[in-house]
Image (cartoon, rainbow, N blue to C red; front, side):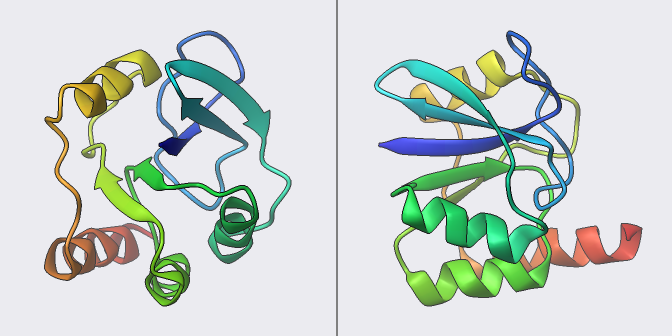
Length: 121
């Protein structure tokens, strides 16, 4: 499984970035290896297209708007997991995923996260 996670920096064990589409960096996790790449996209919609072209299976994030979510839904191939709203480091969230303590988001929970995002921005 190939997982994408927005992060704040390209340093070792960065914090998860709170804003999905505006993240400057993304950590890609596959087969226990972490590779951090600069975000070449402008906004969440373009990020999702980038992910689709790179065969991303899952995204772990804090906040996401409705536009990228609608594209994810239309693609039907990317699973979504919430990192929570509190500061968390990359290694910790990857461990939570590996331990199966993150739950795949359903439509209802995703709409709550979008509403939370939109009240702040």
